[in-house]
Length: 284
Image 1 (spheres, rainbow, N blue to C red):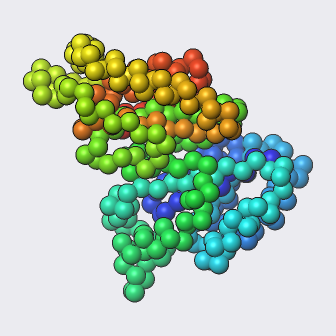
Image 2: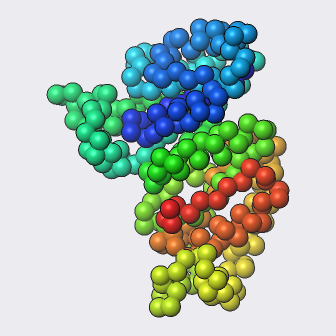
Image 3: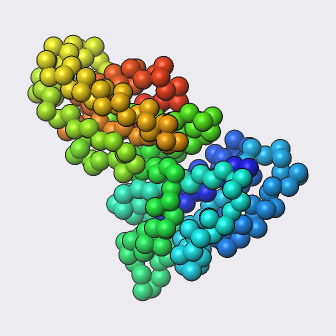
């Protein structure tokens, strides 16, 4: 039996993730009390649930705090035959505040004594036991609903085949390091095409930018160093039953150098890792 637990702070996209899993054939329940998880698992192991691909539940800060504090013990009490994946969604606090302001929805923890920023911080504290146990963490700050749905299909469900799901992602340091990055490579030492007038409005996917970077001796040297490291260690991550790996490459703005190198790494590993995906955060 496969069990997927979705959690995260309010406004991070939990409902979107649960709806996507429902569309993919999972039996889904929102806002399940932690204490009922063992009973749900026992119930859904019956014959009348065999037509479902698996079970997915959303467990978040609407739970009683005592239940959340006991999350690890509850998880350990589940039968060994249950394959459990925990997806934790999050976003930058400024993004969460903006989303609540735009939708005019009430945060579940706000009250006369607790303003929105404090409620968001309190929610993080309540969910720490779940976030620390998460199999996959996704930062949805820069994602649209459609990108999140695609990420669920590619990364969470794509890893179900037993192969490690790898995401190669470019980003700009000026907008922050992706919260879900496992390995981060800083490529800002390469000559910056931004300072070449003809290349400034292009990206690392354009042939002129590629030609500019490939003409620099540092580019191949850096790529080969990164590739050698990943050639040595990615198979060992996979052999240790790691299901997900996010490799992030960052430059200043996330337009040229990181995009070029992320694209090049993606093409290098396509055959070795069938469940590999590419995302250019600042180009979305």
